[in-house]
Length: 316
Image (cartoon, rainbow, N blue to C red; front, side):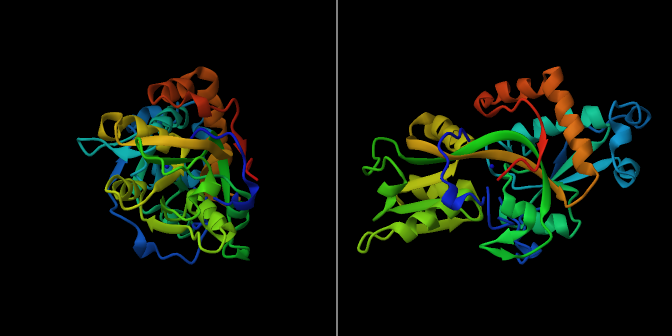
C-alpha cells in the first residue's frame, strides 16, 4: 500500500518497483499471487448503469461486462486491507466506490501479491491494478533494473505518498536517516520502493557496516518481524507506516524516525494505450470536484497526500 517530502532520485523506481519498476516485472510468475478473494463496490442497478454520467466513456468491453476487475495486494492498511468481517476496505476501495458511481460499473477487487499485479494486468487477469502503486517512468516503459521486461503500463495518478522508516517504540537504534541503517537490519515488502531504497543504501554502506535486508510478501509480515525483535527498523510507504504507528499495539509498538523521502504519485495502472485510462481520469476528476475524493481521504486520515487533479503518467 504515505506522506512524502524529500526525494531520493537514486532509487525512484518503485511501491513501487519489482513488478515493473512501482512493478512492471513481466517475468514474475502469476502463480505467486495470493488468495483470490473477491470484493468490490456495490453493483449499480442494471437499468441505472447507462445513466451514470461517464458510462459512455468506458471501453465497449467494460460496458458489456459491467465490471472492472481490480488487482490489488489487500494487506496494506489503510490503503486496502481486510476488516474483521473479511470485507475489503480502505482508501482504494472507497475511491473505487466513488468512481463506480460516475462510471456505472462495479469495481471487483481480487487479492494478489504486490509484485505480480502488473504481470496479471498484462495477462488480462485484471482490467486495472490499484494497490498504492507508485507511478514511475520505468513502470510506464516496462523497465526493471535498467532492462526492458515488458510493454509497460499507463497510470492514472490519484494520490501523493512517500517512504518512511519506523522502529520499535522507544528503541530507534540511533536511526535518524537512511545512512544510519548501515550496520543494521531492515524489513520491507518485496517489490516496493522501500526495497529499492534499501538496496541502494546497502550499496553505499562502508565495509564492516553491511545493511541486512529481509523482504516479505506483504507489509504485515514485515511488521511482525520487527515487532518480535527480528530487525532494527522497517520501511514502507508513508501512509502505511503512519497507520501502523498509530494502530499497532494500540499505538505502542512503533515510532516513525527520520524524514519521509521519495515523494511520488500513486497511480491506477492499466494496459498501455487502454481507453480505460481516459475514463478513469474523467471519473477521478469528477470525484475530486464533487468532494467525494476529499471525504474518502478524511475518513482515513490521509488528507496530506491529496491531489487537486488527476493526471496520466505524471510519475518520473
